[in-house]
Length: 308
Image 1 (cartoon, rainbow, N blue to C red):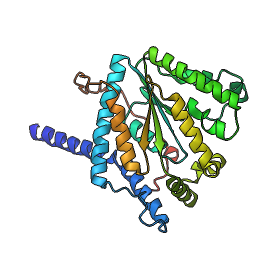
Image 2: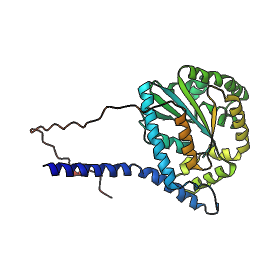
Image 3: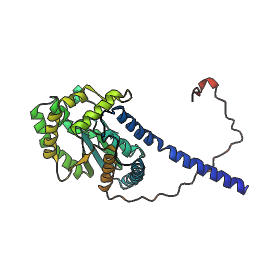
Image 4: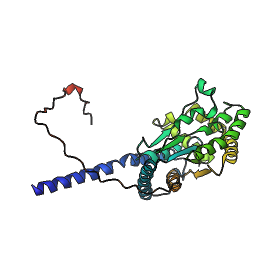
């Protein structure tokens, strides 16, 4: 009996290890896909889209940082902290990639992503910040904004969706709005992902050529290429006028995606004085067995066909 128990324990440990390794496969597939897409554009010889950072180093650091993010998540939940992290940058700058790596191992009830669509007609008639307020965190929550109220200083301004008077009112209001959030106990962290003109061009070319990623290109994205200089001027104005002591801007150099992800996550972790939260040991209870229970068979036509 003792040998059987030991064999069973070893088999269970082996299966658990295999499942943990499998959980990393999605990330590996993402990276391989990035490289495949880069090679579709072989006329961009020597392009830094394929990172100079080795895959082994990248994965080792990414998984180490993700373990720290889990500790941060537990600390935020246990201590009732509140955090807002804003991700801004040009189209194809890599905001979505780093957000995916941050949330990949976290509990969506603690850390959630807000990516609002264009405002409705009713929302256009509200106080500008009103539609963002319901998404702010309660105690024990982290909210990541994939674009934010800074749409007014960027796309809305450049594309003419608002007046210059409305832009000026935004610049007057946003420092006070953000100071109010910080006074309420919200840690507010703002990232701008910076890429070059040629890098954005390259990433758009990748999306055009890949049917799995063409959905990422909208008419607005294409206009952002046409109006590169206008977006640059708008960005410079935004950073200058909204870089405040209570909520400064942090610029992420994002031409190399892998380095940008690691640098951003490491910097984000350093913004919090978190520590590891002790958890009671979890013991799986024995399942109850009722001799009167009979498992009813499920009709075969209800099963998904085994194509693989």
